[in-house]
Image (cartoon, rainbow, N blue to C red; front, side, top):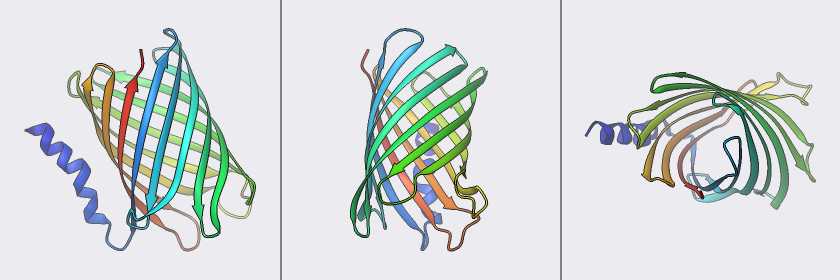
Length: 214
């Protein structure tokens, strides 16, 4: 009963904040393959919508490799190809990023510090270099149910005309293990522009299926 109440709160309470702000739905499928205790690979695809979930904003596929130095420190290198829906039509972009993640664990509570270096290549606009800093907390209720909350800062490095910090992403959600190899995640995200003219806010309900291949 407690977990059901938590799920309802996490998923539906953000609807109170939508008002006249935009919202969308993000649907993702993710697959992981573990080569050994230190090296693993992942593939994921996601469909993102906007304008009250009536219009597609982005569709992407990402491939990544992860190396664990130990149980609490890891690095990820990833490539993403994405199709963005623009006013003039669809635009194909390529993105590369590297994540450095440090975990600090206190029994059932884990704190994650992540630094992401992200470079986006576009054929129609200037390439974008971002540094993203995220602080995340994850709590395990039992072997099947986890919840999480995080906040992330976006620093637009190669934009010299404005303050680098121009975007913030807040997220919270719940994960449920359907079986040993399959997990479903429900989350709420709030992405807002900061330190720019005419800032926008996007509220998101996200659904993710994660499948461990081995």
